[in-house]
Image (cartoon, rainbow, N blue to C red; front, side, top):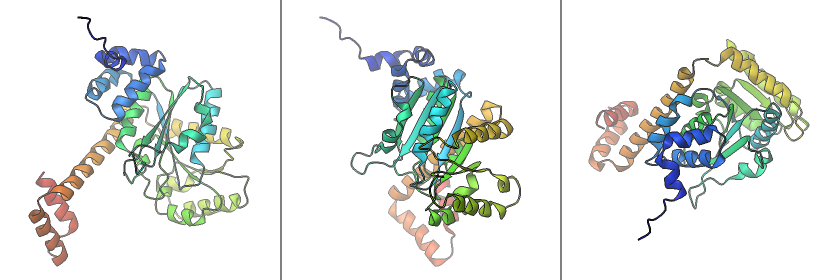
Length: 322
């Protein structure tokens, strides 16, 4: 009887160290296989992460966030083109809203990021947010590691675009860029108490439109109310569709990274690990609340309603009981 030939997927995962070596040699299929396994956290993921560990910590992670309609995808596309002219190897993670039907990513960003087409120096993966309200998903951190191990110089991370709740990027990215645009006045007001707090660089995209200067002044006005380093965040005007302002943005990113990003890769990776732990803890508590014993939860709920127990104390009781 003829032996069944192992599938390409089985062969890829049989030797994680060899797979990582192929990733580092620039083989796109090897990177795609690793990204897929880490995204879905398959049984092979721990062995892959172990094999990648000696090669992690080199890539700079740049996060792009901001309200819907600001043109984040177009800006990432323009910045990618600029980086490729500098011969940088780029990984792009676009966290899209989850499809209500399949649960997967809607993949709208892929349509707009033409810089990723037919360029072996760019690898893009769209991820589904899967209901995470902070603009990211834990899978994004694992995919960052895959791109890092594959030798990417820079990983660009574009978040969902849900507004001021989108602050997880602060825990994951080394450089945080908040993007706005003219005509988003209400969103600017919301950003003052949310996204502005995490910005290392503020960008007014679509600067060729009427109101761009006014939007920039609104952002500068919001910053002027602060004290300390956060009062001096650069506010740049960019037109991503033409590339105007992108070189200045690249300089600002380089300047910030040089001055503020920890040279010790362990420090940066530890921050991302803390994010993963916090997300996992929140998910565990959520599962306990949704599927815990009704009697126990009802007693806690009644105590909260009666004012004899604070919600935080009730949550603490759930955590201690896990």
